Image 1: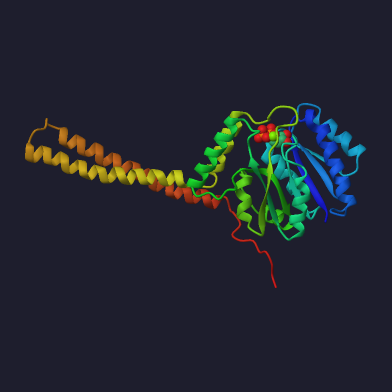
Image 2 (image 1 turned 90 degrees about the vertical axis):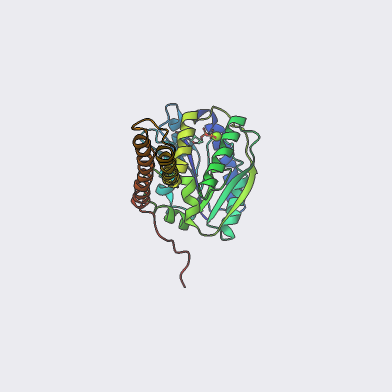
Length: 312
Ligand code: UDP
Ligand code: MG
């Protein structure tokens, strides 16, 4: 099989040499053992780095066989860099593996990915079994995030980032998702086909610092929820409905106070009934509008309705 590896890089000059050396060695041995074709390649996608990353990619592509590069015009973020690489290369390999440049993901897993591909899997997820090397902040926030996603009914593969194999068939399915602001990790399970997970221990970064700020992580988390679920909108409808019911009880009580007990100040009853009643109606109306916005939101994504796996 012809394998491609796609690696987004943003200011990765510190790890680049080591990554290239290790992947180069692994590729040689895999080609020698016949696991992959010799036309297989490793492609770095330079996501608008400000350091020497691109120069290093150029150098590697000249010095060693198998290495290629794509340079983006500016920094678009890891997901977009990855999508760019996958879409540019989807027809030049039987399957593409995506991974980070920082050697946090065990590269020996590549052999297992290839093995699974040969067994007929179209999507293979690399799942971190052990995150003890990640900072506790990152571990805890990630856990919370997976729980919230689960609660919102979003299908997700916990502890899976961007270390995965996609067959050409899966890549062509991915290409049919037209949404611009794509949350890749959430979209891939929607593709279907035969898929499986393989497990590994995530290491520390080989060198350099994380390229994700807390702000970027937060925005990513919001994206992961808001682009897959209309539950927050539905929540408003729910609250509005409860408020409306509550307002009916309040009206009964207010009238009781006014007519039966006759213990109210002038104007209190009419004012209180309108506050509760109109308040309830308003929140519920916002929710109803939300329901329609939710539908518009789902429709504008123009997500593909189905993918065909086989025809006989
Ligand atoms: N990355 C990228 N563009 C960005 C940020 C990150 O291409 O704007 C790349 C980065 O070079 C690395 C991968 O995405 O190869 C994962 O980034 P990092 O290791 O910093 O993330 P972390 O492991 O801390 O979540
Ligand atoms: Mg990393």
